[in-house]
Length: 230
Image (cartoon, rainbow, N blue to C red; front, side, top):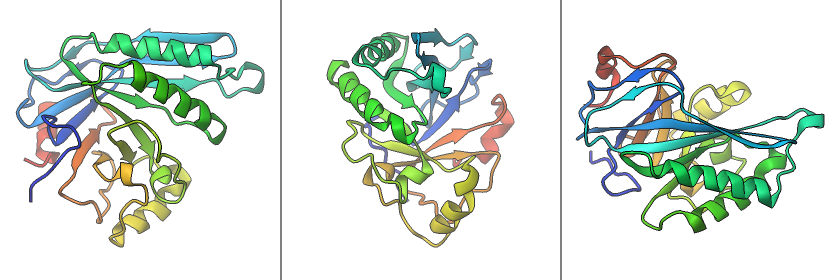
């Protein structure tokens, strides 16, 4: 079965590379791309603090790269962010700089926004989309619950929301049963790709005609290729 992605030219297999030394020179860039953590942006009452990736990342030439920005917010009452227009603008400026990193063709935002943070997230994403070059795709990760019954992503200005079907906490059994029965996500933005983990059972209902982002709890190594769909 043919596998499609929402972005022309993006490989259907993408590997997430987080904040640790990663040597991915063993991949074939014709079939596999890399979504790497480019930076983490920390928000609290005092303001906005971007921190660029600190660990090395080695990939073959011509690898399709997605620059990922992770957003972390301080949830303590006395330190909660103001979620202001200024903070949205500062996040946008920080993300725009990752477009200039060598090889980056796409931007992805990773933010496990709480219910009270959703309006800010939407505002920030709309600002970001308006200021990114039009040819640069913008995507986001999504908690699996956002794609089932907690649907709120409909007006996000993204090419897709990648549902993370791993580390689902209290929702794990409910969502796995939902997918195992052959159900599809209720949110259309979630129907382009899956985010799955090499370290957890793959739900039976995963559809093979979609792109896949792979998470690994440890650094990638050549032997992991046996778990990828080649």
